[in-house]
Image (cartoon, rainbow, N blue to C red):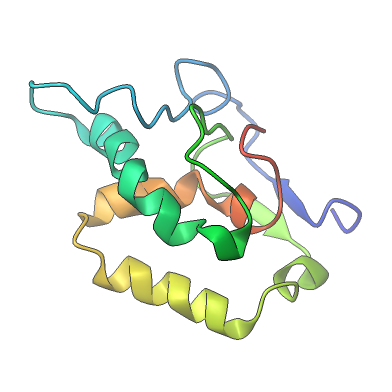
Length: 124
């Protein structure tokens, strides 16, 4: 774990790592039917991406796919955490507390964001 800086601890790679379990932010943007939580979370990435991973995070444009094992079970090294200032983590906390997204949608966004927050590629 120390060499990687971040390691997902989820033993099962599904949901999350298969094409059906990945986040595809633009997949449901034009849907007219009511969205379930997973679909609403995908659509929410359209606005969340620039907020969480704007120019300061050096992540670029919204990707077509975001993929990692779900459920926010991970280990991260002290060195990896300290690569970003405390203010960044405080900002993430404030965003999660103040967003108008529902808790289950904002939580799902974080489930699929931790690996990127700690320096891993968009698709794991």
